[in-house]
Image 1 (cartoon, rainbow, N blue to C red):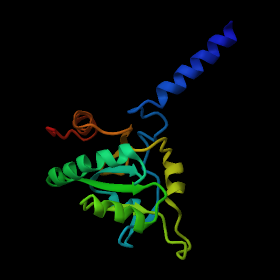
Image 2: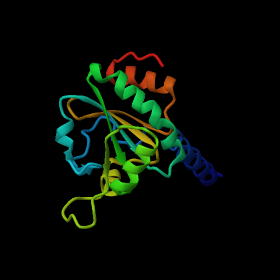
Image 3: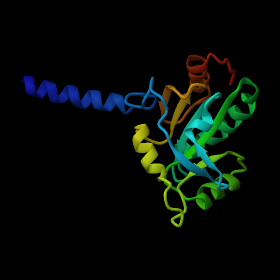
Image 4: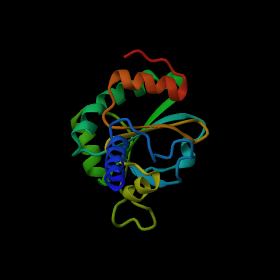
Length: 178
């Protein structure tokens, strides 16, 4: 009886921790992991480049329906909060620059995304290695990173305007009306 209760509790706890919005094991409260990745235009971006500004770091893929659905909202928030010193950087989960940028272009989205390195470029890690170290548990995942490079909030699942407004206020003290 005790064993069955423990197993049931483990199953329930596991389900709760993977619900949309759960921030468990996402590195909240810790510095964002170090990385060196290229964006879709070939420019090298490191974690240190993000210091001094607050960031939404959104993990996405072109094949992920909830990721595709939230991208227009993220583009809107990036434009509206640029004066509040909040930036947006996408981190594509395992796709090459041509795939990721091609998708963004077909959607009319001018967003910067980090991508997997070209196979000819040795020495750069892949996005999947970075995501593993970040403990990203699903797609999409949005990390809220403060100006000191600390992950202050993480959200797993498709962001809605109301959820994003609440998270921005909680993480950064920024008021935004959807």
